[in-house]
Image (cartoon, rainbow, N blue to C red; front, side, top):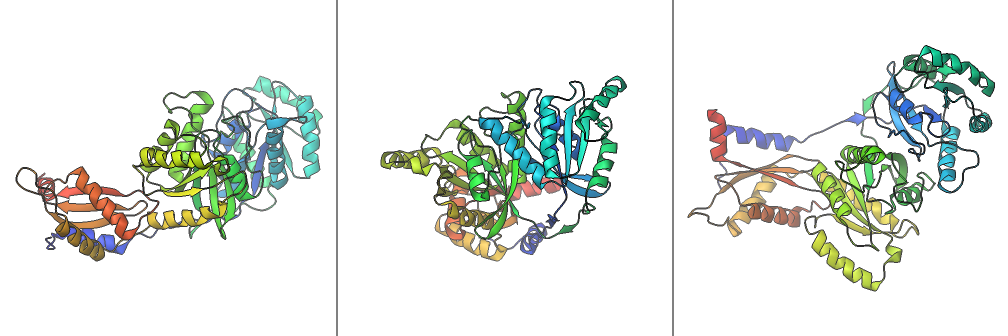
Length: 469
């Protein structure tokens, strides 16, 4: 293999040797603002208004938000956390009871509470029951008279004095009317000044929990968190918004994100399901590693394949967690091995763990798998070591001859990490099969377990053409 390189290629090699060092914002403890109220009063719309982006899923029907979901917010150079909650009801049962309990946990952990009431409807029995719950928390409460879209409706907010929480704060979360004044009032009500955002070392590693509906994502999050962090129900599609949780696993703090299960392609979904699919895709993009949960007791489905494709195309590290292993018998294990060989042959590099979120079986294997996948995702090979290995490889197994001649591999460099990306310089195009051969041998030699790898081939001919333009 020719090791005499052009100036451009030498610069590329030097850049690869230098590496990339990145910094991220510190996750300094920020004061918490909880948004609570009965169903369908506009809590998630208000959250989107406060954080300045459309992130919480909103639809014109009650019960869309089910978990308590935290979002970062800033105002006047200060940072705080806004927690969206599901609708609170005093006599809730079944899933509604779990949603109400999540709202109560948010109230008890908040520094300031925004109690949202529908001005058009006026105070209801549920609102009055919620006031009693809020008073028991002994936290400062700002009464939000929402849906004051014009001055005439704003006059109706006077009726909310009867709740005994002081002066109602007229607001239109949908149109933004009064939102700036509310943000000023929130900063004034917080017990301590919210911290200013600073840069520094990287915070907890972000892990996205993804999978089709009812595969056990929320159960797994609750298991690793050691508390009922997400609402769990046998009805598929309970989780809508991504739910962030800081959890300690394997002696390390991780930021787990529970996502909505995807039933349809984003282009075919509508309403809540459409926005939930966008949030799930965003959570995968924002994560460093994804744990894709598959139901070990059922066949690998098309939805599972689509999620794996999303993670792979996003270039994120990957751990496959086969959940509900306590339901798998000997016959099912035999069939599952055959399915894995057939359905997952395009990602043989993915790390696999067999777990049970319900019983806690092998949950302790998740942390080592995540660390291995992330280490591979960030692995960088020195250019000299890479080319010494590649020289031996192409000499032992040259590229097949096509049309009477075979392209020569001149040089390779690792252009970046997260995921690892390699550039191969040649005298002509390489067969896709030969590139796959190089990838397979690269993994056998250097690992890269749990991460996708990207290859690009640049020919001397294309280099000269680019220089002549």
